[in-house]
Image (cartoon, rainbow, N blue to C red; front, side, top):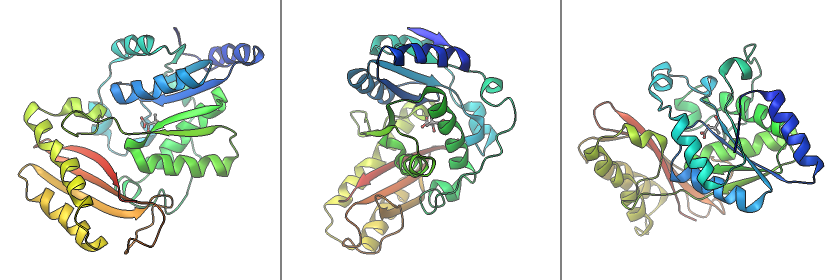
Length: 280
Ligand code: PAF
């Protein structure tokens, strides 16, 4: 497995692969890899000749500096996991390599990027589009792999791909959960053992809501009230939205695909966890 830090080296390596007629899969990550990332990498390895995994903790998508500072950094362990998954190239550039100048581009794809995480974390999706568009330009992949754990992120990236005319296929991969139902996330390492048990209630309650046979508003209120009643959990938002546009829905027949997206503060630090559930 090659570990590359420079854009020019990545490009010449990939040019050689393309000349051999090889297909390229890209798995963008910010490191602190877990089984969720491993599932994306394995899928890319099975569908492409060459899999590139980028590891870059992108500062422009963090609107909260403290969040960026405490984000886990585990490059050595990440590379060991990637080697086991069969990735051929790890691209781990420095911040200066990616942003020699401040990136002044702005992206706007409402409502996908303006609701939920977009409203709570101003500038977040702009930063995501900045880095992901750069990675797509450097690697020119046939396929890009993203976890459905960040449901909204995939919707925004799909809009950007259409807008900028990138040729790749976006492959969205299912959430990988712990046995308790807790969605795997790099942030889970910041939870204590007790908080992990607490956090498992988020998916449990959302799953319960599938069986309610109630209106959208009643389903919403059930999820929010039940989670808020658990000591140590506090819902920041729970939005029941069109699964493609992410616009709010008020009845179940308003869209072909409907998803509930949630963000919950867990524990005393607190750690912000996101998850979602598909209603149809
Ligand atoms: O999902 C993530 O880890 C990041 O938002 C991504 C797509 C790697 C861009 O930095």
